[in-house]
Image (cartoon, rainbow, N blue to C red; front, side, top):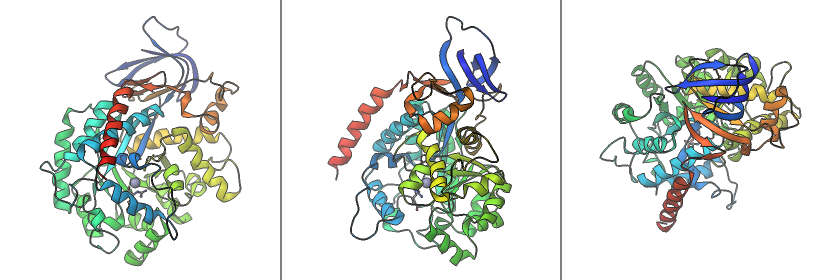
Length: 452
Ligand code: NGQ
Ligand code: ZN
């Protein structure tokens, strides 16, 4: 049982809330109760967010690409460096890095992660003896940390628009549709030992890494999602797709595939208003990754038009250059303010920006990862986060201001506890396996640096 002095339920803020968790699910909620001897007692309980987009291996190159080389750096020069870094990673290193990243996500307040997994093969491109070797490594990291996992094996077949051949740096990613299907089957078998909240979706990497015909084939083979795709992150990507397929990528996808609320469109960054409206109407979740999008120079999301149209959204830590839930949410709003020279942009009409962002991302993220979560309600997964509202950053605030305080004024250090489908892995701000996970990580990094 969890006893919270305050909890944000769907009906609003309640006091002295006692929550019974059974088999990972919220079985009962009582309000105005007194704590019992064996309760886990917390200050303020919120629904925990799902981190809807991660490439966990990129965590280990954080800080390595912030130095300007001759000429002008861009997303594309970063990508070349990322490919070079990725090409040396061993399965053991991939597992160890993922465990660190997942732990950091939990300590930041995320209960679950959507791992958009595209490194499948050995350096050089030959498959491992077990086609799903590297997916199994991600599963091991999820088991070590207890994070809720939605695994998204990625179909990556081409090096760029018009079915360009894979570049050397992309050889570890490549599968045609047939081998991809075999891989997905293998991941389903390998995931059997994971907890029942685990999900396997599929992710065509991007329109440029697949083709209309391949996309049609792979979707025909999967009745239900989650379906994730990188859609419109960079102006060059928009131009390439427009030149090839005749329309902008978001418009093309909506016109040519049955996009619905099983879909998550990652980096729906460059949308004109008509695309934002149509995407909102489709029910798809916009997978926004504000820290990474700022770091890579992608540009700001068309937030006002999308929210106005009722669009669903969630957030992801993507490159994991910095894993912080509070920073992720405030960066989303600050990009809008910097572009529009305005304040309080990400809210429709009047109201709290912090609440709009937090509660919106809780619901949208859960939907994108196919988790029955994103709110504290009976029957939902116990994806929960506790924060300390007596911390200096928050103690002056009313309940109505608290999520604004969390998003704009606090650091992740106000987070005290996190449960992923009832698995209580963060206690007093620390992951229970922290020391081991860090020790393994340090060793893996030493090995990686020695291999250069
Ligand atoms: C990725 N990352 O898949 O890791 C990509 C880079 C690509 C972001 N898009 C590779 N942020 O898009 O081709
Ligand atoms: Zn990505």
